Length: 383
Image (tube, rainbow, N blue to C red; front, side, top):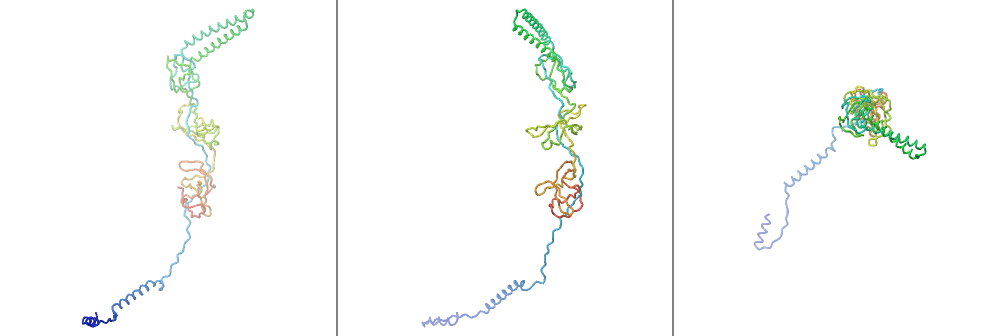
């Protein structure tokens, strides 16, 4: 409060009338100094921020030059086509050449069994004999009936000549005679059936007969198998049927380790409805009987020759359309894709067709290049 304010207040307290006074402010030297300092700082900051545009840089800007991409380096190997034999290969099963059931043709008691199971027999060899007693009685009875019928027929004819008998009586006597003759023939056939014989040479695989046993006519009493030669049966798919023909040579490898030469003896012309495959049979010599029937076998049949390249499966690739093929390099170092077909497969590689006779095949880096690209080839080995 200024002295004038104090004086005015004192006059008011003394009872004199109060007169308002005009207020005035004096300048503050400290406040003026702060304003100048703040202004200077603003000028300095703005000048520093704009120095990058006002003051040119001493270094000239660098110009970035984009380089063209270099060709991909790949390893190649020159491959030449060779003539290779083609084969049809299939898995099959060895079957006996002949396999038949031994059946009793008559009923009766077995008097004697001549062979045992597992025994080799010749064609016509006796397997077993029936007791002939019943057949002998039947033969005697049939003979007596035949003699009686013959007498009846002779008497009827004589009486007809005399005019005493009728033609119908003669016909009846002739029919009775024919029946008696048929009975004799049947007994004779039964006499031949008293022995069960082997229809062909082979081995007795099963025999269910004992001496004194009664056997009914039509009963299977054994099984005879001929494995000389063997027949190997395979199933051929539709697309391979034209590769096979009767008379083709074949190599058969049995699961036992035996390997034999064979000949195609049958190629089916009607497909199985379940598998759409055709039956083919290969005959294999087995004179010593060392190879049993029923075992598995691998059949290899030559089907011709082809000019092909031998490659590692690891270099085979697919193009954008999913076609199996090989990537090669031409004379201009450009990648060329050739579709291929595998004609033979081995453990150490595959034989393929579809390539030129001589070609540079990409063996390393084929997965990083596409058809039509330029590459930097160098000599390399197959994987």
